[in-house]
Length: 234
Image 1 (tube, helix red, strand yellow):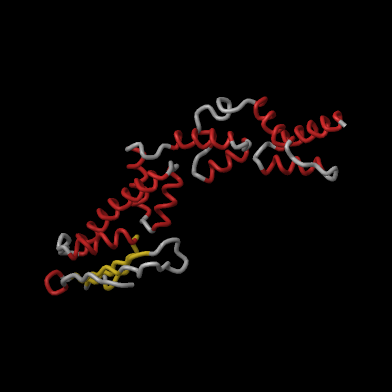
Image 2 (image 1 turned 90 degrees about the horizontal axis):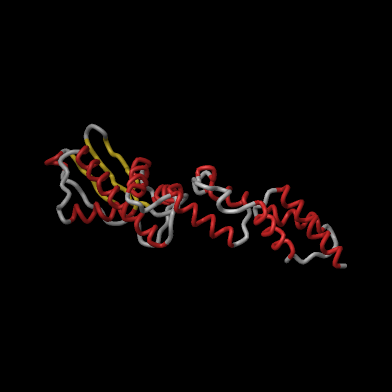
């Protein structure tokens, strides 16, 4: 940790400092470096509060510029919360500028950055209200993109779930996105491109289609169809 901003114990009964990690360092077991606010009061003793680096830098700058001169622990904690929410919103906007996020993904990124649960919840709620994130919009684009890449229904549903979205909550899924016929044809087209050796071809096709996210029943039907057609050509 480097640099410290100290409070004024004699006047306020409060002593605090902001510690910043050295550039390029990464804390053990954490996904990102953290800053730290050390708060000392007669009533609560010494407290160490981990905060995202952006929050620590902002608090440090405000203290050095004498914009932040708390007269009590409660006032300091309130100011920290305000700074944290502002930094979290800025972080969200920066992330979403690069690509769309689901609420679940955004929540996870902020949590990994070190934001407190209540700050994460507040930021995600505000991001939804502002239209920065929208799970329906995200899911629609995600589904269409993955279908174009040959993903099957099961894999799409699984990956949506990993992003905090239930496929059953997506309007029109799966009827508006794919029919049984289109799914069967996609599976057949993908399987037909596979190079077969004559050894365990049926199992290989089923396994391949299953890993692509196609239902097992569809995978087995497609494997039989591909092998039957190749035998017919032979």
